[in-house]
Length: 132
Image 1 (cartoon, rainbow, N blue to C red):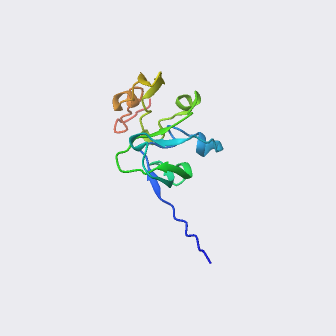
Image 2 (image 1 turned 90 degrees about the vertical axis):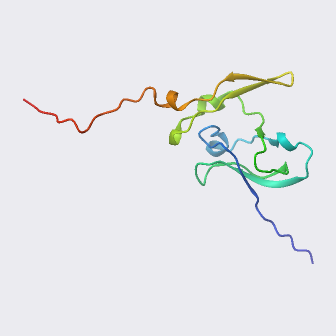
Image 3 (image 1 turned 60 degrees about the vertical axis):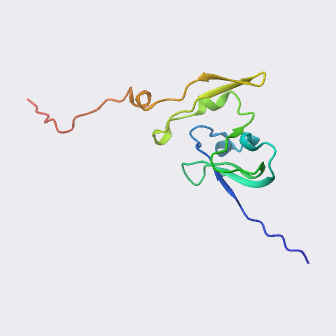
């Protein structure tokens, strides 16, 4: 008799549903590859983000072995990723990279803290309001 024991190995990435909500929102599938280790031994991973328990980009995905600091790519992300991105939890929206002819081109830089708060208006609640 053979007994198969399945275990889940989690790979947490520096991203969340605020950057790519499609897998959590309606179950879209994006191939995930390890760019840093393209010829390594394959393992099964559940790739998760940094925000909450529903922040799962892919479950039980066969990916070349992942080590801390590796760069993972989410393929076929599509045109809607940035337009659906948000600043939920005061997270910056990521840079956008266009791959063309096997070369990376930065087409939008990552947001900064200053850009995140530039339209906020501070209210001084210590000020006394008088009527009359």
